[in-house]
Every structure is written in structure tokens, then in C-alpha cells.
Image (cartoon, rainbow, N blue to C red):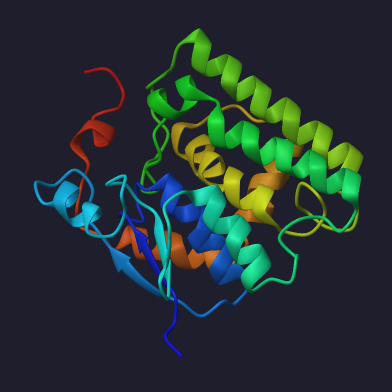
Length: 222
């Protein structure tokens, strides 16, 4: 039986690719990956061969094609995880889905002003008030979820799941841009950083030689 294929972008930069990759790897789902280099002349044409949107990630499982990160996670949860991607409790599951959907659809200022760059180290670069509001909302949401639902583990609903995969790229952003963190956020970042799957992703990204110029240009003035 052929293994599913996950099409991703550079591990150093592709936040959307990280989400389903991390979920699949954490739960030991066997898959093959195809990496397409972002911000290159051939990316658009190559991506269109794998996805109708011309974007990554995309999942091929036999004749099935999925082209959205959250949809891939939902499919994986039903196909391979036996529901373990979401909390078992109905109410908690609904709240986890709401949090994941908020991440999926929102935080535009945070995304644009603090793009993911796994190699990045904090410097004097700073963002505007809109991005700070997004940062504040993320940390407030994390505090609420950990307080109300995080018992029994170090993640937002105790055990690692889809909602954590959705926020993992934000954790990398917070670290790389030197975002001031409250205690809950700092502890949560440590829990994510300790995941073997996330360490694997970041080690692979550190070995990449490709660069996305616009993202790398976000640095201290002068």
C-alpha cells in the first residue's frame, strides 16, 4: 500500500506546512514528503502540480488530494489517529476546534510582521500595535486554555493535539523575535520545543541553505 505524501515548503519558513507535518510525525503516521522551495522562480508551477491553489501544504493519500492545513489535520485525525487529535470530551473538543479555527483564520498582523523564520535570533526589530494586539490575544487564549483545560499534561488541552500543532509556528515566531512572554506562554513554548517531532523539523530547517529574502530582511534597523 502506498504511503501518503505531504507536500511542504522550506522547513525554516513554512508555518502552514509545519502544522500537519508535526501532527503526523508526532503520532508516528508513516508518510513521504516532497519539499518545494518557497520564493523561487519554479515554486508556483511546481506547487500547481500538487495543489489546485498553488500553495503548500498539500496531502495526497491515494487518489485523495487535500490542500488546506487544518483540513489535512482533520482528515489525519479520522484516518490514522482514531480521534486522538482532539480532546475526548465533547465540550473541550468544541473549544479546541474554536481555538484552532481562530489561529487558522486570524492574527493577520502577527503573520505579516513576524513571519516564521526558524533560524532567527531576537534583535531590535519591533512590530506595530496591531501585531502586539495579536500577540496579547494569543497569550490570553493560551492562559485560558491551560487554566480551564490543560490538566493532565503540558499542552493546551493536556495532551498534544491538533490545536497545539496549529499554534506551534507561533511559538517559533515568539522565540525568534524575542516576544515578551508571560509564565504560561513561556512554559508552553518549552513544552512544544521539547517535542521530538518539532526538534526534528527545526534541525532539518537549520540545515537548509535556501533563503526567503523578505523574511530574512526583518532585522534590527541599520
